[in-house]
Image (tube, rainbow, N blue to C red; front, side):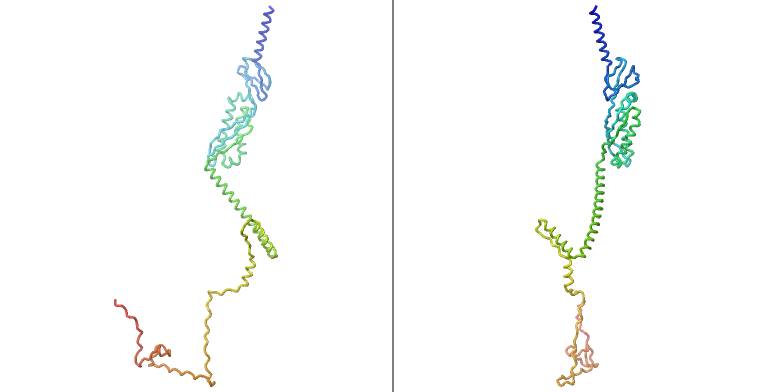
Length: 326
């Protein structure tokens, strides 16, 4: 009798232990438990720690309350300025209502992922390429609002959305590189021109000061010689003072102008003899006046050049070379 009683007590204890083991549940610190009894949600969410359910009647589902990092696959789209790009992002979210995350949506992770991809494609179509590259903070906020609006009803809170990378076509990359290079060259030219302007003003002031003190120019010349001689060169360049060249120009006589016309030669006529002097030579005989029959050709007094022709004979015409027979 006693033995049968002990056996029954032991069997009851074992059954109670088995039931307790089947009813016992442990919820971790970062989890929350949702209990369904005969498929109906029971009020209240089980917190972290040890909890009990009715075996075979209740069913406990645990929901992770940690922040989930979900990468969004790269989405290809056309921007508002007709540029094809591929953009990928990452979404940070967490569950704030465990019961809604279980009841309102079948799989909240998959739902958030699909909503993120759809919103990302919409953001690409509404934005320009410059906004995708430089104004990402505003795009991230807009993308977060687009995903968070439907996720609130699912018991999910979007913590943060970030655009990771924007992939451009190779032709667009080369075009942007050329544009950036041209812009940098423009800025370099402007800076160089500004530096030249400032340097010219300073040089003008220095030249004005040196012009008042000639010794300053000589000292500057010696400083230039020292600076050149400091280098290990076999050739020494010595500047020549410009003032010395100007002095030599003023001291040298002016060369004759080759283009000027030569002066006319002076003709000296002999003085007429004085008839009162005893040693004066007799005057030359006067030439006879030329008459109609004198036979002078050119009026000169040279008989060799002007032969005398007999009176009444005309002057023969000048001889011409015989023309060849045609």
